[in-house]
Image (tube, rainbow, N blue to C red; front, top):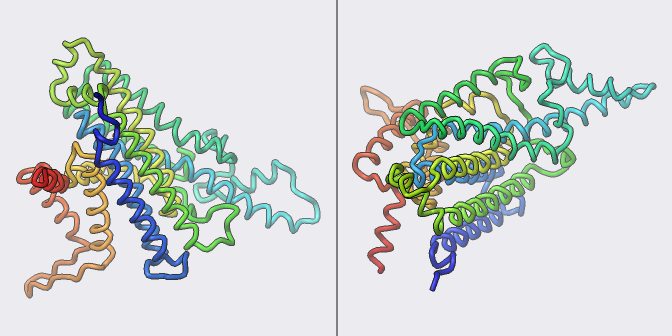
Amino acid sequence: MQKSFIAQNPSVLWFLASLGLFTLIVTILSEATGVGLISTSFVKTLGKVLCLCLIAIAMDVIWGYCGILSLGHFAFFGIGGYAVGMWLMYERTENIVLQSLAERSIPPTPDEVTEAIATQIFGVVGSSEFPAIWAFSHSLTLQLFMVILVPGILALVFGWLAFRSRVAGVYLSILTQAMTLALSLYLFQNASGLRGNNGLSGLQNIPGYEAVPQSVISIAFFWASAMALALGYVLFARVLTGKMGSVIRAIRDDEARVRFLGYHVESYKLFVFTLTAVVSGIAGALYYPQAGIINPAEIAPIASIYLAVWVAIGGRGRLYGAVIGTAFVSLLSSWFTGGGAPNVNLSFYTIQWTEWWLVLLGVSFVAVTLFFPGGIGALFDRFKKERS
């Protein structure tokens, strides 16, 4: 008799219950409910961490389960952020322009309104015209569609070219990193149509909800991030269950044997690569309205390397491990780099954690790789074995 999905994946139920309880506690203690034990800024931090956990799960599926170390998934994350950020910036600027032009005795024409909006947005890079990629920026529905479509198409094309050529291992990792670097360098140019180094800002101001306190908006995004993480966890757990999951793991362990058995390895790789890219784009679309700003530096290759470090520390090959590692390292990073950790005075030298945090992170990654390859998630596996 075949086991049910939950019976095959008991971690799903535990994860959803833990996430639901965590979400409820944060909501009750937030400023939105009047309790105020958790500040609005920290609620936004927690919401961003949940989005990072979602892309970490995607990274764990492509690397921990399929064996492809992608150093470019943060590019898809950034694309999702830019897609939703374009609508947020356009809509907010349009409201400001319409209010200012309403004082004229003669109503402005649609062309004048469009030109004024373009000047307001692109004046910082010396332009007063909308680039072609902003063609759908006036529509939230279309931009949300772009959140899925653009990362999906980019991953599909890149993956098809790479996998059909049977590029694998470190060479594939270098290719994904090169793709990310090329995209980042392109976006740094003013001619990219996305304001170059200035990026898109003011994304925390949601059009039509200007009168709503940021405390309420932050909780709304926190809940949306939690729901996306829950759905993403269930989706990937479903994909990794049954025959497909077995083939994906087999590709990681011995790709040549899987191909010899008659499976079209490239199709499985392409499916996983594209699906994880789309989920990464959705995570980015939820992350950057909470961050308030996005610029090309967010897509730099180092961001994808950090992502791999988070998954490794949490324990790759375990969905909950990716979540635990990302949440742990992200919150610890905020504490160290935000000035929360006290400096250590050694009499001959003072360790300032804002400068030494990356060194500590690098040492931790090396230590986990050498001495504890199972990561933090292995502790839960050990506990489960001892109980059974």
